[in-house]
Length: 239
Image (tube, rainbow, N blue to C red):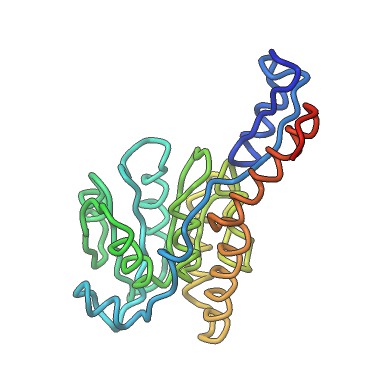
């Protein structure tokens, strides 16, 4: 491999994988996260978003979704198992993405499936309706939906593993459950829902702040800019 090669991965998990790989042996490896546009994903008043989408105002909404939720690596079965352990009778599960509605229908809980979404406006409204966004991925290179949800001020519950591990700050912007324990995932969901109002609002503010500071497009562009400048200087190119 060329000596000047630099390897950039989008999560600490992938960086560790690359660092221990024989393919990239001797190459510098660093993490620069995926980016999101926090000017497109931002907090929207919850009541307005629920009214706009025809969702109940008097329920605690648990949101889960991905392009194809039933993909094995998205861990949807872990979410369904977790929901059987959530001890609340005031929840409403909202799903989005392909093939998400059928599994939830088997649960004894009110639910609604919003289908596959194509635009940031729809996603922003859906993130806004939720009291908590659950991302039960078993393996994810990064986890863009987590960062988008947090940018919209929605706390996230995920497993403390692979890409999502970098995104959520435990009990600060959400909850990181023991991999891949459905019971602890349920504990995380209940922890968020059981918080006093002022603590839940603090969690929402923290989520937005972390998304802007860590994953905004301008932040990530700056990190790549610094890397390119460093490489050009190392090659003797004036910058």
